[in-house]
Length: 182
Image (cartoon, rainbow, N blue to C red):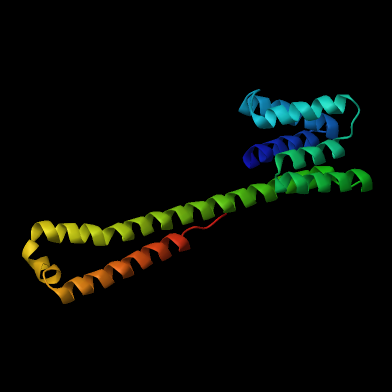
């Protein structure tokens, strides 16, 4: 829903730049969300609800705050707070809405870059976890006599058990290190 809210904010800022009032810009943004995401999308439903409430003479400041609470989006909450402050004190809504959209877009791009890097590292970790098993399977099929010395006596079994324990610890540590929330 973050991406959809960013698109709404961009449409809202564009409507403000075109000279519309804040209420009219919200309506225009709502229309754009229906075009982009369809009538049944969550953002479209929420924006229709917002427009309907504005027709009942409720202020957009209050409605945007309610939307932020319902959507549980940090960015929507931040924008609602900024919108409320500007509406009360009279600020440059056009530049602030545009700047807010830019900041949210940059944040989303950064989060996506981090997710991509983390996924790459997780894939590398999976490969590294499978490599010892692949090498062992290859050696077992290519040269079974080579491994018979390691598995055929008590010290070899003890050594390979310890190696298996180290492998299991490295596997668990690798999984834990690559579990990053963005």
